[in-house]
Image 1: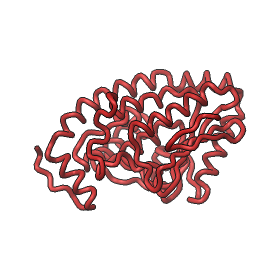
Image 2: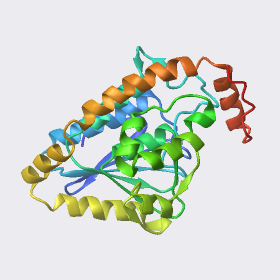
Image 3: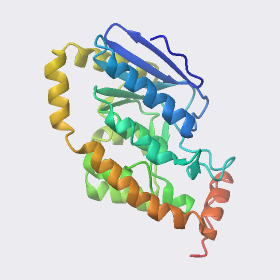
Image 4: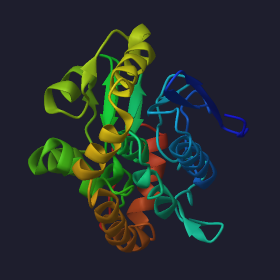
Length: 257
């Protein structure tokens, strides 16, 4: 892979492409980071020798979402395109992906983790859809992808409470697929991606296309609905309080307006 990127490392080990997010410790995302990941995935899709990819991250968190504490407008329109609309590019990747979740995957970071076909995690993994705790509506197509993965009831529980799910429970729920020790998360993701890459490439692509038929379109439709709700909830007093209370690690003092 000859392209260079500002916030990600792109490489490969044989038929497995590797995209490493390089914004430690928490790997907060914005339009630029999402576009770099999507560009790397699309480059891998054009490379016949690459059959699967691993998405991993430096630092403590896999991705702690958008950096609302320091950039309250993150996720609003940036450069003319909304962050979550840009993210729908990721759902159109053609080859199977494995996310290595070594720590928190929070908010939009959970959306990024769930976008992959599989997740390898550890006891220290943390999964949370904390949007309502911040005072606004979920995004990153999670209202479609999360129920599809773990069922409507468990998705509702995560959305309504904002609670954090640990690695063991994530595997039990089907939110993650493989549980390994913290030190082995990336290795475990590589092993799964390598196992996938041993399948016949044309059969693999056609099977995945069937299994994910309509997935990207449905994710895009969900995003449109989410944006409508996010746009007005982001303008409330509760959203300002949610960002403040989250930064101060305390419960929100909600006004309902």
